Length: 134
Image (cartoon, rainbow, N blue to C red; front, top):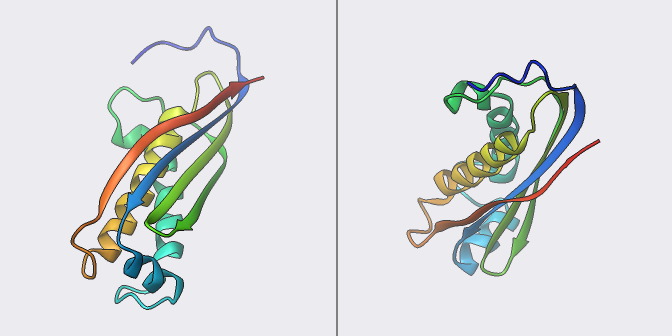
């Protein structure tokens, strides 16, 4: 693990995104809360937050960070769900890995909860959208 002890504590923010590509019928079922596993977006939201908080346990050599906030959001489109995860902290290292992990696990949770009705789904475009420090 890289020694960051000499770096100053700074406010940091990162935003990551992913996309679940799926059929229009799956989006209709999501909107209608008609999927067999329940409230898919609520569960994926909690999963993304929990994943961001546990990134230091999941990714070798990642520093465990005290997170000030995690926000996972979803935008339903005709052919998929856009997922974003924004993470903030005051620490010696950035939170882009936490944002990426949150977005990824939220997407995987959506996939898991929708797979019974849509065999064509895929997760695309996991990326960092923003990384800032002040």
